[in-house]
Image (tube, rainbow, N blue to C red; front, side, top):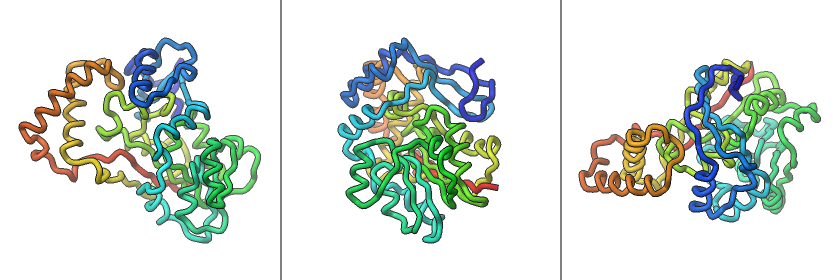
Length: 312
């Protein structure tokens, strides 16, 4: 019996089946990356939905290997961003005296943002570790599960920025993270917000395996406290980036709605030709009828969300 990889409930159902060949083509067309090795000869992947905690997750869990992320970093020069708004929000909950454990430190940009006496960063990407070292930030190449098992030290703050959606077993990831927290310690998590049309849109190549294993929304993040002994301190949906106009957001929203009506079985991935045909007309309608004038930008949901939990 299939179980949810967060809450372990058996109340899960398949919401979409995606042919591996389609996924491979989308990656190659979008990023010029061949994911054949990651697909491990599977013919399809399934998107599951948990009715208990509202988490969406993919299976088989095609988690990208180190070589995949190294290639992705080369193809997308801004893969590790130094200017995330989540960094500024998280920093507000950290004082100089706090000890900080960051999981998935990337090139060490958050470590440069904060000023603390005790910082430990975990990272797998060798290129990112090298870049962090150039800024005198030493990172440990180890998973949180192994680090938790081998080190007794505990921290006031345990944080991860856009890591949780990549891991194959979020339950064990969170369990290990919480085990490294002091009493009343804080767990800070930033992930893509799947309530946004900017992340849940069709053929969003970076929101499917082997890049992302899970899709988090506000409800599934809030449900974390029903699985672990935590309470929510604060959360914030990050505002729409300035580079995305109101018109672009409305185009994405209309495209998603129309595709869901025309192709109800394809919520995640669809033949690119079909997508482009529909997009041509929805873009025309938004522009010609000035539909974006009808929407209040305050109601737009940003791509990312950050939650701050406290250990009870």
